[in-house]
Amino acid sequence: MDDGPIVDRVSIRLGYQIPNFTYPGTAADIGPTVIAQAREAEANGFDTVLVMDHFYQLPGIGAPEEPMLEAYTLLGALATATSTIQLSTLVTGNTYRNPAMLAKTVTTLDVMSGGRAVLAIGAGWYELEHQQMGYEFGTFTDRFARLEESLSIIEPMLRGRHPEVDGKWYQAHGTLNEPRVRDDLPIMLGGGGEKKTFGLAARYADHLNVICGDDEIPRKLEALAARCQEAGRDRDSLETSYLAFVIIDENGDTARDLQKQFLRKTGVDLDSLDEEGRSAATARHFVGTPDDVAEQIQRRVLDKGIDGITVNLVANGHIPGIVELTGKTLAPLVK
Image (cartoon, rainbow, N blue to C red; front, side, top):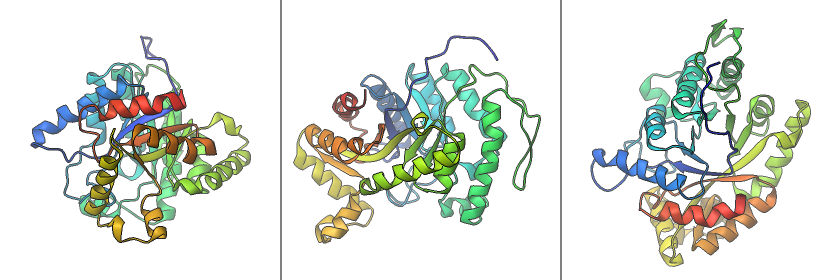
């Protein structure tokens, strides 16, 4: 393993995800706007910046034809624009890359960023991308079998070992991965599957990002504890975080109006829903003034046993000052 200065590894306690590239201006303005958000996050208490690994915009955020950047090219650019913040996807779609190539890609990001990469990975789920771009989608069972095979190749490559795998989906034969700046590059899984995802996390991951409604958190953590017990692992050795949609403004009414506008864009009229419908549509939303958002995050997530928070600011994160406001609001809760 190559020697060299690296940034001390930190856990993911406050992450900033950038899922939206539909900004005012032209395509040429997207890069500077993303870089500005990453730098603002780095300066205001966030420890990780994360981007989605998709080629089209997701149904819950916008139309497929809206702007979407390729994840690892973008992370490479952010590595040169920042100096201390960790860099990751949330999460890499396993079906889009050969696992040995993915291990090499994230290791290169780690080398070029001075030890700031996190490999986050999941089974893949967005069928439209697979169909239109020519990736095999397969069944749910297929995708998780492929993910398990991938991890059996990726994990040893990140740790300086040379995997021998002759699987149904992938092969690796004494595969090399040089250079590396460390052998403990973190692996994160993301999702809500209590058997397959949580089981793989218990076996392979340093971190699990739990994606679910906030009312489901206690059950998810119980399931995770069971998977760790089955794997013979200390549950406390697997850190958790929660993905939250945060819409924050010094004026709470402005934040709530932004929430309604965002939901209308995805075909949801909040004012027309009954209480049950509103609850379902906003189960991962944390909206209002800084005090409102801090109280909601603490009560609905952290008090239930989750270790950290990853937020996106899908409605207004591109506006200068909003990432700073969010960092100053939430960093004291998780540090």
